[in-house]
Amino acid sequence: MPEFTDLLFYGLAALTLGFGFLTVANPFSRNPVTNAMFLVLTIISMAGLFVLLHAFFLAAIQVLVYAGAVMVLFLFVIMLLDLPEENRRQIKTLTLGLGTIAVAAIAGIFIKAISHAAPLAASDRWLDGETKPLGKILFETYLLPFEILSLLLLVAMVGVILLSKKDLK
Amino acid sequence: MHAGLNHYLTVSVLLFCLGFLGVITRRNLVVIYMGLELMLNAANLALVAFSRFNANLNGQVMVFFTITVAAAEVAVGLALIVALYRKRGTAHVEDLATLKL
Image (cartoon, rainbow over all chains, first blue to last red; front, side):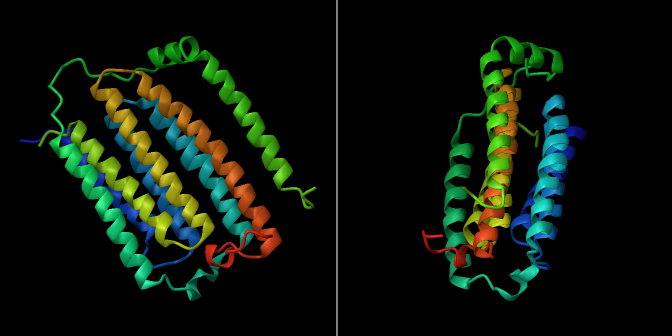
């Protein structure tokens, strides 16, 4: 008899993979806005998987940063570029076939490796993802990478402003 | 069946391969970027699963850093795409086959 969390896992995993498939290869629409919307749904169902893994803080960050900020950026660019013209372009069948074969081979290798790995011993000391220890480790052990990360964000911001100037000099 | 580490890793691998398929087959730069985001998210899922089942918090910190770097990467990448679109008037990889602007 499967537990309720297991049923939840299977449901969320199916949703994540289904929405992910519709993100990259939607058979009904070639509009990039549709792809972006399905990417939002993928990310939200993945936040559900994070909750199942007791990573509550990361689930919140996933929704706030990815489904919020990053996807708004994507939609802005799609609207800015005005890209509905992919309708008239067909993906070549050869590209699709060869790509699918290559990707299926990679997936096969990975899944074979996973299924042959020794199963983890069932233990009761699984991580219970409270936010307090995460904040502690973030601001004690990982303080320097955290500060470097803020520098990276500053550099990215300046770079984006520079890149989006009209005349690149 | 009880959902363990292997199940989460399988979902992660499949999601990674979906993103990879998008990067290979799609011809629109913005949609290729979405495939990249899927691949990054799949890696995040694997890290969080390892973190949970090994009772080690470092994986979650790694995912925190990955999400931040991915946000910066998306901003820079999309700015590059917009600059390229201004210069060449297209965002299809087939029209962007030359090295010269």
